[in-house]
Length: 472
Image 1 (tube, one colour):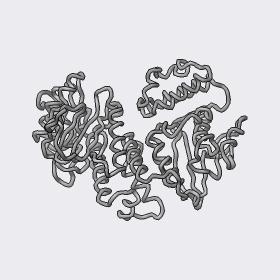
Image 2 (tube, rainbow, N blue to C red; image 1 turned 120 degrees about the vertical axis):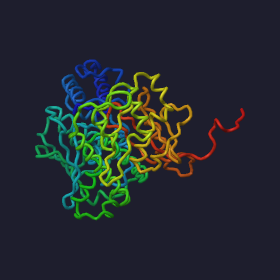
Image 3 (cartoon, rainbow, N blue to C red; image 1 turned 120 degrees about the horizontal axis):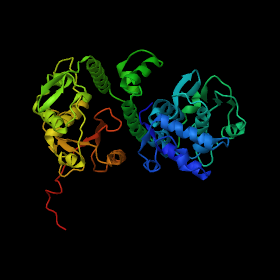
Image 4 (cartoon, helix red, strand yellow; image 1 turned 30 degrees about the vertical axis):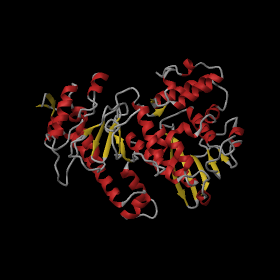
């Protein structure tokens, strides 16, 4: 829970709400470690303990009942990022509940959701991700206000037939009943929204199947990065235990919107990574000489085609660059047996922005990372030496018909990556636009502070502007 995974926009809205009620931002943020300047960065992330402290401060500073309702009413779908867009474009109410149940964790909510069906009743249940105490009621009221069917100026996502609340009715229960046209049962054993199953299949006016597909792919990628149990194995498992039970590869792949070949490949990759993690825990940590300096025994083992842990590499940047070039020259030859384990490459690190800029076009340094990305997504050409892009802002390399671009280190990398990802998603909806197509995306390493996200796209044909004979 100490990982920074909660978008700061939620706390920013809390501060804005309390400011309108005469409470200073400093008082709301006291003890959180969050500065007012950080609130202006919509891409910033905080931890759950920080978020919980904001709620505790707000509750103490604003004793007026219905704090959660007032906060939830401020939120629009855009506050919830790609999850909000997926919900808006969902084809039916059932899809809305499925998306909320599966992907809500990527937004760092204090409540986690599960969607299930019992007979003809669909149930969206919620439970605390950590002990909330008196904050529980605030979180529930916030949720009710966000999706209230009578909310002024808002469309109802799905109309429940019954809501069960897991605490006694408060003095302001009329606020609850004013938001919904269904019974609200307080003092229940669980927090649940119940729906009439058949009503969930009615098509929604704003549905967009292609946009939902794009949004869900991004949600799934974020979920896997967070390690929230949303990777491919868990998705397959959820389909196996759901009726009709039994393993039929073609049927499971179809329900997961992928081909059987793709499903096999992704399961194989996940199996390899799990084996790599097990092997890393068993390896000793004694050092051994290699290249320009000393690296751990794990890195030395990687040179023979086994596995190295990314945290085992030496700190000096020059040693890392030397090891990376050795990898590109073939020192880190991979075994081609059925039990092959991919090595885990050390994350790129630099002492200064000047050093980073000087390495942008260094094929020897970036070559191993590009090869790893190509192989990770079966894009081919991993054995081919990449060609550096001309005067890039971020490391960009041409590998035959594939272009690989990595984002990191510079101050604006998060916004640049988000903007380019959004642009690729947008042009993908119109095949008439002559633009690169996204082939793959992901994170180079599992580090929320420096994940080094990347995009792999098609290469556009034609002549580079610097090689064309242009006149002004």
